[in-house]
Length: 489
Ligand code: SF4
Image (cartoon, rainbow, N blue to C red; front, side, top):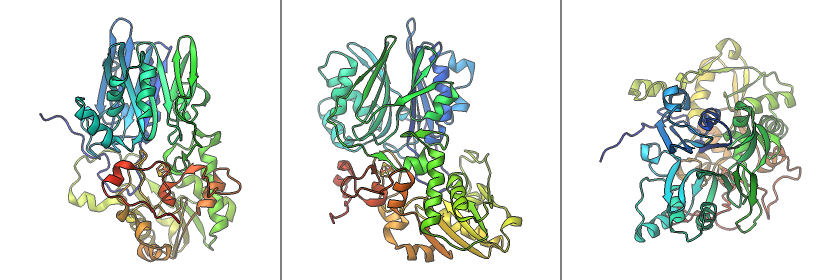
Protein backbone atom coordinates (compact mmCIF):
# COMPACT_ATOMS: atom_id res chain seq x y z
CA UNK A 1 0.00 0.00 0.00
CA UNK A 2 1.38 3.43 -0.84
CA UNK A 3 0.39 6.46 1.11
CA UNK A 4 1.26 10.13 0.93
CA UNK A 5 4.68 10.90 2.32
CA UNK A 6 5.89 14.31 3.35
CA UNK A 7 9.20 15.39 1.85
CA UNK A 8 11.82 16.29 4.47
CA UNK A 9 10.89 19.53 6.20
CA UNK A 10 14.42 20.85 6.05
CA UNK A 11 15.56 20.62 2.44
CA UNK A 12 18.44 22.91 3.35
CA UNK A 13 20.91 21.76 5.87
CA UNK A 14 20.43 24.44 8.48
CA UNK A 15 22.62 22.45 10.86
CA UNK A 16 20.46 22.90 13.93
CA UNK A 17 19.13 20.38 16.36
CA UNK A 18 15.52 19.97 15.37
CA UNK A 19 12.82 20.73 17.88
CA UNK A 20 10.72 17.83 18.94
CA UNK A 21 6.96 18.25 18.97
CA UNK A 22 4.38 20.60 20.37
CA UNK A 23 1.20 19.53 22.13
CA UNK A 24 -1.92 21.41 23.12
CA UNK A 25 -5.34 20.54 24.55
CA UNK A 26 -8.48 22.38 25.62
CA UNK A 27 -11.58 21.39 27.59
CA UNK A 28 -14.71 23.33 28.50
CA UNK A 29 -14.91 25.88 25.71
CA UNK A 30 -17.13 26.06 22.68
CA UNK A 31 -15.37 24.79 19.56
CA UNK A 32 -12.25 23.78 21.45
CA UNK A 33 -10.52 22.78 18.20
CA UNK A 34 -10.28 26.44 17.17
CA UNK A 35 -8.31 27.17 20.34
CA UNK A 36 -6.17 24.11 19.72
CA UNK A 37 -5.39 25.26 16.17
CA UNK A 38 -4.30 28.66 17.51
CA UNK A 39 -2.24 27.00 20.25
CA UNK A 40 -0.53 24.73 17.72
CA UNK A 41 0.18 27.72 15.51
CA UNK A 42 2.04 29.32 18.45
CA UNK A 43 3.95 26.04 18.93
CA UNK A 44 4.88 25.66 15.27
CA UNK A 45 8.58 26.23 16.08
CA UNK A 46 8.48 22.80 17.81
CA UNK A 47 7.57 20.95 14.62
CA UNK A 48 6.75 22.00 11.08
CA UNK A 49 6.30 18.73 9.24
CA UNK A 50 2.73 17.89 10.13
CA UNK A 51 -0.06 18.52 12.58
CA UNK A 52 -3.25 16.94 13.76
CA UNK A 53 -6.30 17.68 15.90
CA UNK A 54 -8.82 15.33 17.50
CA UNK A 55 -12.04 16.71 18.97
CA UNK A 56 -15.04 15.22 20.73
CA UNK A 57 -18.63 16.25 20.39
CA UNK A 58 -21.52 14.61 22.29
CA UNK A 59 -23.50 14.04 19.10
CA UNK A 60 -20.80 13.25 16.56
CA UNK A 61 -18.28 11.50 18.80
CA UNK A 62 -14.54 11.71 18.06
CA UNK A 63 -13.46 13.58 14.94
CA UNK A 64 -9.95 13.91 13.63
CA UNK A 65 -7.95 15.78 10.99
CA UNK A 66 -4.29 15.14 10.28
CA UNK A 67 -2.34 17.04 7.67
CA UNK A 68 1.18 17.63 6.36
CA UNK A 69 2.59 21.11 6.65
CA UNK A 70 1.96 24.22 8.68
CA UNK A 71 -1.02 24.77 10.96
CA UNK A 72 -1.79 28.07 9.20
CA UNK A 73 -2.20 26.22 5.89
CA UNK A 74 -4.34 23.40 7.26
CA UNK A 75 -6.37 24.40 10.27
CA UNK A 76 -7.65 27.86 9.44
CA UNK A 77 -10.36 27.14 6.89
CA UNK A 78 -13.93 26.98 8.10
CA UNK A 79 -14.40 23.83 6.03
CA UNK A 80 -11.79 21.91 8.06
CA UNK A 81 -12.61 23.41 11.44
CA UNK A 82 -16.32 22.64 11.06
CA UNK A 83 -15.38 18.96 10.97
CA UNK A 84 -13.85 19.27 14.47
CA UNK A 85 -16.74 20.34 16.72
CA UNK A 86 -17.10 20.00 20.47
CA UNK A 87 -15.90 21.36 23.79
CA UNK A 88 -12.87 19.07 24.04
CA UNK A 89 -9.91 18.81 21.65
CA UNK A 90 -6.20 18.02 21.58
CA UNK A 91 -3.56 18.56 18.94
CA UNK A 92 0.02 17.94 17.97
CA UNK A 93 2.64 19.47 15.69
CA UNK A 94 5.42 17.21 14.64
CA UNK A 95 8.98 17.03 13.56
CA UNK A 96 9.78 13.34 13.34
CA UNK A 97 12.24 12.27 16.01
CA UNK A 98 11.48 8.58 15.74
CA UNK A 99 9.87 6.36 13.18
CA UNK A 100 10.55 7.49 9.62
CA UNK A 101 12.98 10.27 10.42
CA UNK A 102 12.50 13.26 8.17
CA UNK A 103 9.95 11.35 6.05
CA UNK A 104 6.64 11.65 7.76
CA UNK A 105 3.82 9.42 6.56
CA UNK A 106 0.29 10.52 7.37
CA UNK A 107 -0.14 7.46 9.60
CA UNK A 108 2.69 8.81 11.81
CA UNK A 109 0.91 12.11 12.38
CA UNK A 110 -0.55 12.46 15.87
CA UNK A 111 -2.81 12.52 17.87
CA UNK A 112 -3.18 8.73 17.89
CA UNK A 113 -6.57 7.28 18.68
CA UNK A 114 -7.57 4.00 20.33
CA UNK A 115 -11.03 2.54 20.88
CA UNK A 116 -11.18 0.74 24.23
CA UNK A 117 -13.97 -1.19 25.95
CA UNK A 118 -14.70 1.84 28.13
CA UNK A 119 -14.62 4.33 25.19
CA UNK A 120 -12.15 6.02 22.92
CA UNK A 121 -9.03 7.96 23.80
CA UNK A 122 -6.61 10.08 21.80
CA UNK A 123 -3.05 10.94 22.78
CA UNK A 124 -0.42 13.41 21.65
CA UNK A 125 3.16 12.87 22.80
CA UNK A 126 6.19 15.12 23.00
CA UNK A 127 9.44 13.34 23.80
CA UNK A 128 10.94 10.00 22.93
CA UNK A 129 10.50 6.54 24.37
CA UNK A 130 13.96 5.06 24.81
CA UNK A 131 12.77 1.46 25.17
CA UNK A 132 10.25 1.65 22.29
CA UNK A 133 11.92 -1.04 20.16
CA UNK A 134 11.80 -3.60 22.95
CA UNK A 135 8.20 -2.68 23.79
CA UNK A 136 7.14 -2.84 20.14
CA UNK A 137 8.73 -6.30 19.72
CA UNK A 138 7.01 -7.57 22.82
CA UNK A 139 3.64 -6.08 21.84
CA UNK A 140 3.81 -7.45 18.29
CA UNK A 141 4.68 -10.91 19.62
CA UNK A 142 1.59 -10.68 21.81
CA UNK A 143 -0.64 -9.78 18.87
CA UNK A 144 -0.66 -5.97 18.67
CA UNK A 145 -0.98 -4.60 15.17
CA UNK A 146 0.90 -1.33 14.78
CA UNK A 147 -0.41 1.31 12.39
CA UNK A 148 2.57 3.67 12.42
CA UNK A 149 6.34 3.70 12.82
CA UNK A 150 6.10 6.05 15.81
CA UNK A 151 7.39 5.16 19.28
CA UNK A 152 4.34 6.92 20.73
CA UNK A 153 1.96 4.27 19.40
CA UNK A 154 3.35 1.83 21.99
CA UNK A 155 1.42 3.79 24.63
CA UNK A 156 -1.94 3.06 22.94
CA UNK A 157 -1.13 -0.68 22.71
CA UNK A 158 0.06 -0.84 26.30
CA UNK A 159 -3.18 0.87 27.35
CA UNK A 160 -5.20 -1.67 25.35
CA UNK A 161 -3.53 -4.51 27.27
CA UNK A 162 -3.96 -2.97 30.71
CA UNK A 163 -6.56 -4.52 33.00
CA UNK A 164 -7.37 -1.26 34.75
CA UNK A 165 -10.95 -0.04 34.79
CA UNK A 166 -10.70 3.40 33.28
CA UNK A 167 -8.58 5.24 30.78
CA UNK A 168 -6.48 7.41 33.13
CA UNK A 169 -5.57 4.28 35.13
CA UNK A 170 -4.74 2.40 31.94
CA UNK A 171 -2.56 5.29 30.87
CA UNK A 172 -0.73 5.24 34.21
CA UNK A 173 -0.23 1.51 33.78
CA UNK A 174 1.11 1.95 30.26
CA UNK A 175 3.44 4.80 31.16
CA UNK A 176 5.01 2.82 34.01
CA UNK A 177 6.40 0.48 31.33
CA UNK A 178 7.77 3.33 29.26
CA UNK A 179 11.29 4.72 29.64
CA UNK A 180 12.53 8.06 28.36
CA UNK A 181 10.93 11.45 27.98
CA UNK A 182 7.24 12.11 27.67
CA UNK A 183 4.93 15.03 28.04
CA UNK A 184 1.48 13.95 26.95
CA UNK A 185 -1.92 15.48 26.40
CA UNK A 186 -4.71 12.97 26.01
CA UNK A 187 -8.50 13.01 25.92
CA UNK A 188 -11.44 10.74 26.46
CA UNK A 189 -15.07 11.68 25.80
CA UNK A 190 -15.18 13.76 28.98
CA UNK A 191 -11.63 14.21 30.23
CA UNK A 192 -8.53 16.13 29.24
CA UNK A 193 -5.42 14.45 30.64
CA UNK A 194 -1.89 15.79 30.97
CA UNK A 195 1.18 13.80 32.08
CA UNK A 196 4.90 14.47 32.45
CA UNK A 197 7.56 11.81 32.86
CA UNK A 198 9.17 11.52 36.30
CA UNK A 199 12.23 13.54 35.22
CA UNK A 200 10.08 16.21 33.58
CA UNK A 201 12.40 16.33 30.57
CA UNK A 202 9.89 18.06 28.29
CA UNK A 203 7.69 20.99 29.35
CA UNK A 204 3.92 21.01 29.92
CA UNK A 205 1.86 23.82 31.41
CA UNK A 206 -1.71 24.33 32.59
CA UNK A 207 -3.81 27.37 31.73
CA UNK A 208 -7.30 28.67 32.43
CA UNK A 209 -9.32 29.80 29.45
CA UNK A 210 -12.66 31.29 30.46
CA UNK A 211 -14.53 28.51 32.29
CA UNK A 212 -12.32 25.92 30.62
CA UNK A 213 -8.76 24.65 30.85
CA UNK A 214 -5.82 24.32 28.50
CA UNK A 215 -2.66 22.20 28.48
CA UNK A 216 0.27 23.33 26.39
CA UNK A 217 3.93 22.61 25.73
CA UNK A 218 4.73 26.26 26.34
CA UNK A 219 3.15 29.34 27.88
CA UNK A 220 3.44 31.32 24.60
CA UNK A 221 0.59 29.19 23.24
CA UNK A 222 -1.60 30.05 26.23
CA UNK A 223 -1.08 33.73 25.49
CA UNK A 224 -2.37 33.43 21.94
CA UNK A 225 -5.78 32.13 23.11
CA UNK A 226 -6.01 34.59 25.99
CA UNK A 227 -5.58 31.84 28.59
CA UNK A 228 -4.15 32.61 31.99
CA UNK A 229 -1.05 30.62 32.95
CA UNK A 230 -1.90 28.62 36.08
CA UNK A 231 1.17 26.46 36.71
CA UNK A 232 3.54 23.90 35.23
CA UNK A 233 2.51 20.26 35.37
CA UNK A 234 5.09 18.85 37.75
CA UNK A 235 7.57 16.14 36.77
CA UNK A 236 5.87 12.78 37.32
CA UNK A 237 2.41 14.35 37.64
CA UNK A 238 -0.80 13.35 35.91
CA UNK A 239 -3.70 15.80 35.82
CA UNK A 240 -7.20 14.68 34.88
CA UNK A 241 -9.43 17.62 33.99
CA UNK A 242 -13.22 17.38 33.78
CA UNK A 243 -16.06 19.87 34.12
CA UNK A 244 -15.61 19.43 37.89
CA UNK A 245 -12.05 20.74 37.86
CA UNK A 246 -8.44 19.48 37.94
CA UNK A 247 -7.42 16.31 39.79
CA UNK A 248 -3.73 15.66 40.32
CA UNK A 249 -1.91 12.32 40.85
CA UNK A 250 1.72 11.27 41.07
CA UNK A 251 1.63 7.74 39.68
CA UNK A 252 5.37 7.22 39.24
CA UNK A 253 8.25 6.72 41.63
CA UNK A 254 9.51 10.19 42.62
CA UNK A 255 13.00 11.04 41.37
CA UNK A 256 14.99 14.28 41.15
CA UNK A 257 13.79 16.18 38.04
CA UNK A 258 16.05 16.70 35.03
CA UNK A 259 14.41 19.23 32.72
CA UNK A 260 16.06 19.67 29.30
CA UNK A 261 18.48 22.58 29.64
CA UNK A 262 18.49 23.04 25.87
CA UNK A 263 14.85 24.20 26.05
CA UNK A 264 16.25 27.35 27.70
CA UNK A 265 18.97 27.78 25.07
CA UNK A 266 17.11 27.10 21.86
CA UNK A 267 13.94 25.00 21.64
CA UNK A 268 11.40 27.08 23.52
CA UNK A 269 10.12 30.38 22.23
CA UNK A 270 11.76 33.42 23.86
CA UNK A 271 8.37 34.73 25.03
CA UNK A 272 7.66 31.55 27.02
CA UNK A 273 8.18 31.10 30.75
CA UNK A 274 10.05 27.96 31.85
CA UNK A 275 10.47 27.03 35.49
CA UNK A 276 9.25 30.51 36.44
CA UNK A 277 11.92 32.17 34.29
CA UNK A 278 11.53 34.12 31.09
CA UNK A 279 13.28 32.26 28.28
CA UNK A 280 14.31 35.59 26.77
CA UNK A 281 15.95 36.75 30.00
CA UNK A 282 17.72 33.43 30.42
CA UNK A 283 19.15 33.76 26.90
CA UNK A 284 20.25 37.30 27.63
CA UNK A 285 21.94 35.97 30.80
CA UNK A 286 23.71 33.35 28.71
CA UNK A 287 25.13 36.16 26.56
CA UNK A 288 26.27 38.01 29.68
CA UNK A 289 27.95 34.88 31.06
CA UNK A 290 29.65 34.31 27.69
CA UNK A 291 30.98 37.87 27.68
CA UNK A 292 32.36 37.38 31.21
CA UNK A 293 33.90 34.00 30.41
CA UNK A 294 35.26 34.75 26.94
CA UNK A 295 35.77 38.47 26.30
CA UNK A 296 37.34 39.67 23.07
CA UNK A 297 38.12 43.07 21.61
CA UNK A 298 35.81 43.82 18.70
CA UNK A 299 33.69 46.52 17.05
CA UNK A 300 30.32 44.80 16.77
CA UNK A 301 28.29 42.02 18.36
CA UNK A 302 25.97 40.40 15.81
CA UNK A 303 23.50 37.57 16.38
CA UNK A 304 23.06 34.67 14.03
CA UNK A 305 19.31 35.24 13.69
CA UNK A 306 16.92 34.52 15.13
CA UNK A 307 17.85 32.22 17.96
CA UNK A 308 21.19 33.92 18.72
CA UNK A 309 19.56 37.34 19.21
CA UNK A 310 18.87 37.52 22.98
CA UNK A 311 22.31 36.07 23.79
CA UNK A 312 23.96 38.60 21.47
CA UNK A 313 22.07 41.42 23.23
CA UNK A 314 23.29 40.05 26.59
CA UNK A 315 26.86 39.82 25.30
CA UNK A 316 26.66 43.41 24.04
CA UNK A 317 25.20 44.74 27.31
CA UNK A 318 27.86 42.99 29.37
CA UNK A 319 30.82 43.87 27.15
CA UNK A 320 29.77 47.35 26.11
CA UNK A 321 30.48 46.43 22.46
CA UNK A 322 27.70 47.78 20.19
CA UNK A 323 25.00 45.36 19.07
CA UNK A 324 24.17 45.31 15.37
CA UNK A 325 22.02 43.31 12.98
CA UNK A 326 24.95 42.25 10.81
CA UNK A 327 23.01 39.30 9.38
CA UNK A 328 19.44 39.58 8.15
CA UNK A 329 17.17 36.57 8.00
CA UNK A 330 14.77 36.11 5.13
CA UNK A 331 11.60 35.48 7.14
CA UNK A 332 9.72 34.01 4.19
CA UNK A 333 12.13 31.20 3.43
CA UNK A 334 9.90 28.42 4.70
CA UNK A 335 9.05 25.34 2.72
CA UNK A 336 9.28 27.30 -0.51
CA UNK A 337 11.34 24.80 -2.42
CA UNK A 338 9.98 21.36 -1.72
CA UNK A 339 12.39 19.70 -4.10
CA UNK A 340 15.33 22.04 -4.44
CA UNK A 341 17.61 21.65 -7.41
CA UNK A 342 21.30 21.04 -6.87
CA UNK A 343 22.02 24.66 -7.76
CA UNK A 344 19.58 25.93 -5.14
CA UNK A 345 20.91 23.49 -2.59
CA UNK A 346 24.40 24.88 -3.10
CA UNK A 347 23.16 28.37 -2.31
CA UNK A 348 22.40 26.86 1.08
CA UNK A 349 22.48 29.28 3.91
CA UNK A 350 22.51 32.34 1.58
CA UNK A 351 18.85 31.70 0.87
CA UNK A 352 18.03 32.14 4.52
CA UNK A 353 20.59 34.63 5.75
CA UNK A 354 22.11 37.71 4.15
CA UNK A 355 24.97 39.86 5.41
CA UNK A 356 24.43 43.55 5.99
CA UNK A 357 27.57 44.56 4.08
CA UNK A 358 27.54 48.27 4.85
CA UNK A 359 27.66 47.43 8.55
CA UNK A 360 30.27 44.68 8.47
CA UNK A 361 32.95 46.06 6.16
CA UNK A 362 36.26 46.59 7.92
CA UNK A 363 34.82 45.61 11.35
CA UNK A 364 35.96 43.11 13.94
CA UNK A 365 32.77 41.09 14.38
CA UNK A 366 31.62 38.88 17.24
CA UNK A 367 28.99 36.43 15.98
CA UNK A 368 26.74 34.92 18.65
CA UNK A 369 24.97 31.67 17.76
CA UNK A 370 22.99 29.25 19.93
CA UNK A 371 24.93 26.10 19.05
CA UNK A 372 27.36 24.39 16.72
CA UNK A 373 26.16 20.98 15.58
CA UNK A 374 28.05 19.81 12.49
CA UNK A 375 29.60 23.19 11.86
CA UNK A 376 28.46 23.36 8.22
CA UNK A 377 26.34 26.49 8.65
CA UNK A 378 28.90 28.18 10.91
CA UNK A 379 31.53 27.79 8.18
CA UNK A 380 29.25 29.27 5.55
CA UNK A 381 28.29 32.19 7.76
CA UNK A 382 31.94 32.90 8.45
CA UNK A 383 32.61 32.94 4.67
CA UNK A 384 29.72 35.33 4.10
CA UNK A 385 30.99 37.68 6.81
CA UNK A 386 34.53 37.64 5.42
CA UNK A 387 33.22 38.15 1.85
CA UNK A 388 31.48 41.23 3.15
CA UNK A 389 34.84 42.61 4.22
CA UNK A 390 34.93 41.90 7.97
CA UNK A 391 38.40 42.41 9.48
CA UNK A 392 38.03 39.62 12.08
CA UNK A 393 35.37 37.02 12.93
CA UNK A 394 34.93 35.73 16.49
CA UNK A 395 32.33 33.09 17.27
CA UNK A 396 30.70 32.99 20.70
CA UNK A 397 28.34 30.06 21.23
CA UNK A 398 25.46 30.19 23.72
CA UNK A 399 25.67 26.48 24.59
CA UNK A 400 28.55 24.18 25.53
CA UNK A 401 29.97 21.97 22.74
CA UNK A 402 27.28 19.52 21.58
CA UNK A 403 29.27 16.31 21.72
CA UNK A 404 26.54 13.71 22.35
CA UNK A 405 23.25 12.90 20.64
CA UNK A 406 19.92 13.46 22.35
CA UNK A 407 17.62 10.46 22.76
CA UNK A 408 14.81 12.32 24.49
CA UNK A 409 12.85 13.82 21.64
CA UNK A 410 15.34 15.95 19.73
CA UNK A 411 16.69 15.01 16.34
CA UNK A 412 20.48 15.01 16.52
CA UNK A 413 22.97 13.64 14.02
CA UNK A 414 24.90 10.50 14.92
CA UNK A 415 27.69 11.15 17.35
CA UNK A 416 30.49 10.99 14.76
CA UNK A 417 28.78 13.79 12.79
CA UNK A 418 28.85 16.18 15.75
CA UNK A 419 31.82 18.50 15.36
CA UNK A 420 32.49 18.63 19.09
CA UNK A 421 32.57 14.83 19.32
CA UNK A 422 35.58 14.60 17.02
CA UNK A 423 37.51 17.84 17.57
CA UNK A 424 38.89 19.92 20.42
CA UNK A 425 37.79 23.56 20.69
CA UNK A 426 41.01 24.66 19.03
CA UNK A 427 40.59 22.17 16.18
CA UNK A 428 37.02 23.41 15.72
CA UNK A 429 38.27 27.00 15.54
CA UNK A 430 40.73 26.01 12.83
CA UNK A 431 38.13 23.96 10.99
CA UNK A 432 35.67 26.86 10.99
CA UNK A 433 38.45 29.27 10.02
CA UNK A 434 37.58 31.96 12.55
CA UNK A 435 39.84 34.19 14.61
CA UNK A 436 38.44 32.83 17.87
CA UNK A 437 35.78 30.37 18.98
CA UNK A 438 34.44 30.04 22.51
CA UNK A 439 31.50 28.13 23.96
CA UNK A 440 29.78 28.93 27.22
CA UNK A 441 30.90 26.51 29.93
CA UNK A 442 28.41 24.06 31.40
CA UNK A 443 28.70 25.84 34.76
CA UNK A 444 28.17 29.18 33.02
CA UNK A 445 25.02 27.85 31.39
CA UNK A 446 23.73 26.61 34.76
CA UNK A 447 24.41 30.03 36.26
CA UNK A 448 22.50 31.66 33.41
CA UNK A 449 19.43 29.48 34.13
CA UNK A 450 19.53 30.54 37.77
CA UNK A 451 21.79 27.98 39.48
CA UNK A 452 24.15 30.41 41.20
CA UNK A 453 26.61 27.65 42.19
CA UNK A 454 26.67 26.14 38.69
CA UNK A 455 26.17 22.47 37.96
CA UNK A 456 25.87 20.09 40.87
CA UNK A 457 28.17 17.35 39.62
CA UNK A 458 26.85 14.58 41.85
CA UNK A 459 23.22 15.40 41.13
CA UNK A 460 22.84 17.66 38.07
CA UNK A 461 19.73 19.85 38.22
CA UNK A 462 18.98 19.50 34.48
CA UNK A 463 19.36 17.04 31.65
CA UNK A 464 22.50 18.16 29.86
CA UNK A 465 23.41 14.84 28.23
CA UNK A 466 24.13 16.32 24.80
CA UNK A 467 26.91 18.34 26.43
CA UNK A 468 28.06 16.10 29.26
CA UNK A 469 27.37 12.61 27.89
CA UNK A 470 25.66 11.80 31.20
CA UNK A 471 22.27 10.37 30.26
CA UNK A 472 19.66 10.51 33.02
CA UNK A 473 17.73 7.62 31.42
CA UNK A 474 19.59 4.72 29.84
CA UNK A 475 18.99 4.90 26.06
CA UNK A 476 18.20 1.17 25.85
CA UNK A 477 17.22 1.03 22.17
CA UNK A 478 20.37 2.85 21.12
CA UNK A 479 22.61 0.69 23.30
CA UNK A 480 21.09 -2.31 21.55
CA UNK A 481 22.08 -0.71 18.24
CA UNK A 482 25.68 -0.34 19.40
CA UNK A 483 25.73 3.21 20.83
CA UNK A 484 28.56 3.57 23.33
CA UNK A 485 27.94 5.60 26.47
CA UNK A 486 30.67 7.74 27.98
CA UNK A 487 32.92 5.73 30.28
CA UNK A 488 32.41 6.51 33.97
CA UNK A 489 35.06 8.96 35.25
S1 SF4 B 1 20.17 15.50 25.71
FE1 SF4 B 1 20.27 17.74 25.39
S2 SF4 B 1 18.56 18.22 24.03
FE2 SF4 B 1 18.22 16.16 24.83
S3 SF4 B 1 16.90 16.41 26.62
FE3 SF4 B 1 18.99 16.40 27.36
S4 SF4 B 1 19.65 18.56 27.34
FE4 SF4 B 1 17.78 18.40 26.11
